[in-house]
Amino acid sequence: MGYTKNTIKGVSWTSGGRFITRSLAFLKILILARVLTPSQFGIFGIASLLLSFLETLTETGINVVLIQSKDALSDYINSAWVVSIIRGVIVAALLALSAPLIASFFHIEGATQLLLFTSLVPLVRGFINPAEVKFQKELRFQLQFWFTSALYIVDAVSAITIALITHSVYALIWGLLLSAIFEVIISFLLIRPLPKFSIEKKYFKDIFHRGIWITGYTVFNYIAENADNAVVGRVLGAEALGLYQMAYKVAILPITEVSDVVSSVVFPVYTKISGESKRLKKAFFKTVSTVALGSIVLGAVIFFFPTQLIMLFLGSKWLSIAPVLQVLIIYGVLRTIAGPASALFLSLGKQKYVTAMVFTRFFALAIAIYPLVLAKGLIGAAYAQVIAVAVEAPVLCFFVYKCFKKDE
Image (cartoon, rainbow, N blue to C red; front, side):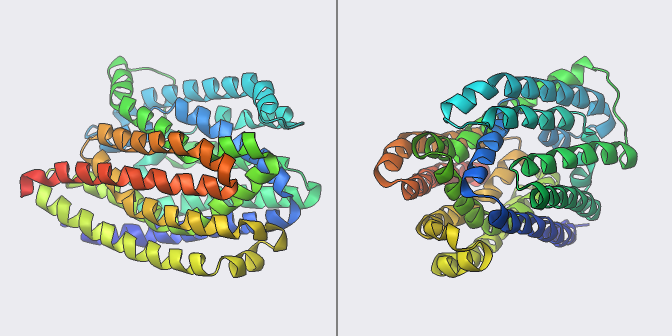
């Protein structure tokens, strides 16, 4: 049986799940934008920036390896869980130890305590049962829908409730922490096989060997997506960072939903048909066309009506982000259209293509970001992101050509 039906079902379930989870995420942002100040959002942005960086730095590519592998999930599960736990402990320790230095670097009082509290999040996440990847590996997207929706509900409800009571930025961290605890519990109660704290040397080495390019990709991708935040926070301060991150979320959230939904579905599908080059080529370009149409339509709405959307959803104190939002929309559309290429490369085991592609974007951003922020402020950071993704585009196209060259 072909995979078109599975893909359509997967997109339907994943779209539904993303709609619910992102609606909750967007609702959380809207409510907290009226409860918290831009400066508080900036402080949280610094905490999440460091957390994401450390998690990225220690990325092992476990999920990608488990999906790519033709072996049974049970063969890898114990080693994958041990790797995950070790990673969680390392990230938590690094986050706690670096907290005073980061607070000093950004010149923000009170950030040290927030960062120390944030270190609990990766520690808890490390104990999640890796077998939850089976939803994606086995194309069981309806179960993924319910599982992911429950996690976002816990996060959103916790953060909103605590924020309304305390008006504290700690509410955002509590949402992440309670969601992580809930995920650990559910992953052991409802998902099989259950992991044991045991290392099978063969699979342990395989995870690291096959995941090394994933690590490189995620590190460069993280820097390419967050160097602007680091420079804005350092040069312009916490309030400016809060404004910029809000513009980024509003620009990226609805746009990338198109790409993220489709990419999460087509990656396992592409993997299953990776040996049929012509079939894979047809599926890939059909995906790109669909994603391009959806992202351009959504992007146009935000580009032409930024002020109206900001007033409607965020309030007048965020109006200054309108021009930044318009530039970031261009970046979002370009990134979204390019999204399916990563799924293609990973399905073919071409992790090095993804790494090289993202390194190009990172390199371009590293050159452009600082002088543009100094010269243009927040909108300069947005321009740097557009330049970086434009420089990445030819490299991406070249690698896609190499994947399908033998079909010509």
